[in-house]
Image 1 (cartoon, rainbow, N blue to C red):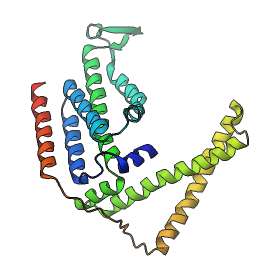
Image 2: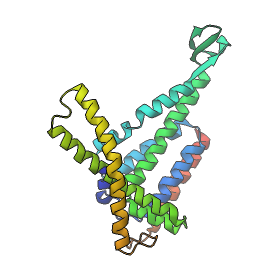
Image 3: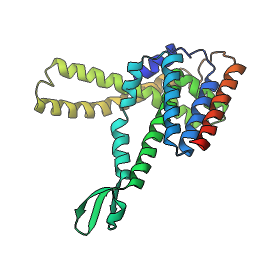
Image 4: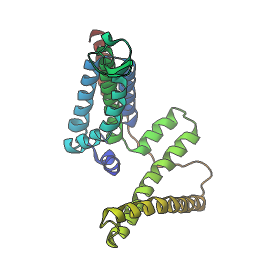
Length: 255
């Protein structure tokens, strides 16, 4: 998470208008969601990877590491879709008997699972493009321009801030425990981890109160205003985005 935030400020597309990156990511995401072509999803994932690594100049190793994070979750979810429970043995390519039922894999279930798997990964690629190339402050600026209710944007800012507060607090507690041999054995590791989680909850409440007091002392009245960079929308970038999205739509009908 910290690496994504760092690269969002130093990437090769940092000077591109945030609205352009937001439109590209969201429109491509919509195409991923409403299409069922696995080939198209692979093309979109490839394009997003090239944009992130080549134009965004994000190290390929970092990108792959981030893409591996949701792999287990997506794999388990799609496995549940692929498995078919039926009494009709003719629909299964492979299965085992469980009493009067058959549990196995059918061609339809496998096809549906593959569509969901690649659709999810292509969608993640779109969101990673936005996350790696656009700071949260710029994303919130775009949402404000879209007239999103301020309560949502304020919550996004506070939650995003507290992600780093939690990470910093957990890191400090872990270092303190580790320096006292809190993780020297399996038994101690479980004990230390339990104490870390409980203390993290209490310290997070305390830090949240300190944050509110600090905001109030600085004149907080319900709106979090931040400085905005003056960036201009590039007509050529708009044309490139339109051509790319049009190509995806055409491929959706062809593939």
